[in-house]
Length: 175
Picture 1 (tube, rainbow, N blue to C red):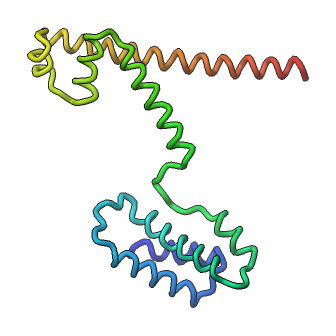
Picture 2: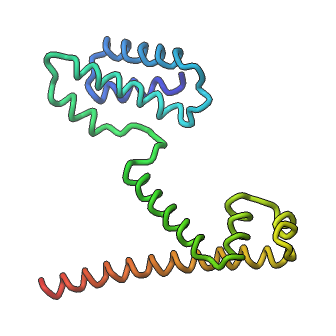
Picture 3: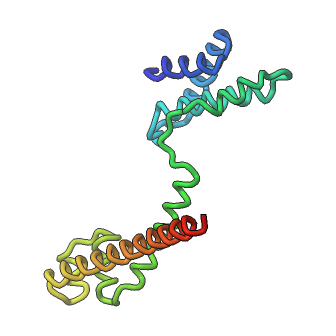
């Protein structure tokens, strides 16, 4: 596995005894072989690191005597992962909800065109036929929808930045 050297180096930095490193690597390979399919794995190196990290964490939990440095070092070591953090996932959900609300707030025809074109990917010609409007009207409505959504998001961003500036100025006046 091309990522084995990186995992071994990571385990050495975590001060894992060399005989345990071999065992952890072997267990990780066994877990990979036991998978029905690896097609869903988008980041093989991050996945392999995570398997080994989980195995090491389990091993430390089962140990009767654990060096406190081992636990803190594992937490401090960075593991390659393409997975978003919980904070990033929550922010993305909030942003998606906001964009959905902005789409729903578009004028009726603009919203229908925007959803068909930008969300569902329906070709312009088909939308024009479905709605009984010209292709240029479809294009104009899609652009209008995008412009309205972008403007609303920019205004929200400006409001948030303005609130932060006001709070900072208020604190500096008080201090």
